[in-house]
Image (tube, rainbow over all chains, first blue to last red; front, side):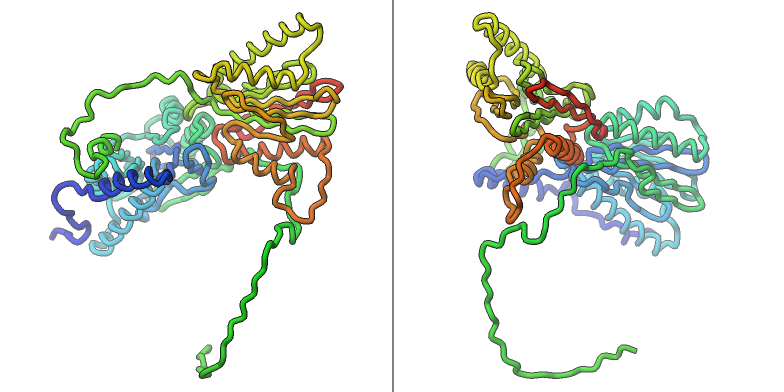
Length: 277
Length: 238
């Protein structure tokens, strides 16, 4: 019996309503001399490694908006289902919403079928959606999970491409992380060794890439369960300031004060007892 | 994504042709190498501070490339922006300082260097040096002086100024802590050297937290009548 109520089939052809709207908005804003807000990109380093008993995913925690750090402790490892987690790089809103949508759809599937979803199912749904939007959704995702068929690690690109490989890195710091992974990855590593490898890969991305930084999050998925360690390692730099910058009350001047009394009269009064037992 | 904004024209309708056609790739003679500079003038001292990170795009070229350059015993200049132009400009300034010394048998004063720099920069009005300069030093009376410039030579004397990539984050903080702006009922204590150095360190720590181009280390040059003292403080490296 086909579970056709899981993902609704979209209308035929590509849906570009929003692209037309965006182009029109750009035109309007240019005339009004305001700039369209820049979407917040995560400018990230994310990595994933398959090991003997499961999958290890890692990510940094910096979100940038252009050259400014917008969030120093953002969570890039998203929950998809109890056995599948997903790291997201690219436009922050896109990764959040896409993974949320996927998670909701897979929860419905789990309830209907009584099973944990398989990783390939998550990958196929993602690929379907991202391809349909022709790259307009800027989400580069690393999916990792353990299901009845084994441990899986997949990469899904923003245009809908898939890669099924034992170790991966994505984001602006991917080349730095991949250097470490290429050097030290071995098939069937022990769990602790894999965690250290992912930590080192993310650390290399943090130090070499300006778009990545701050702390390192790690998520370990095994048949027994998930260990979401946030943060796995805090950045060793502690910003110790030399002076205290506190302002006494009254430092901000009050320029004007206006008090408007509200003239109210009691028209009706009712008392209702609340049952607080 | 790039393809689609060019497929749809200004009125929102699809253009007649679908491919983008020949694309002209322009060579840009400039590139932005990041970095932040800061200068503070006190009663009898001046401080010029800069971070030491040299970057391009999302990569780091060097973690140890300070942007303060010593000009004379009483003047230090901080240059940030395009590193190629920073190097050339400081070479030109050094040459001009030597020429002045040989002709006039004395070193240039801070005010004179500032005026000269303004003409050097305006000389390249139509192909500017992509450099944000801040000069810090002592004037003829021994008081601290700060001169801030724009890339084509407009300058003025200030008490404090921030320039470079994190300037928009630092300047308001300095306005509040040194200029006592936006504060009511606070004693206007004159800035002494120790407090100024602490403030500069704290302000750069904050800049490094939120600006990706600022970090690695902080180089502080303190100019007093005894000479120029340099101090290096580590900042976050990520």
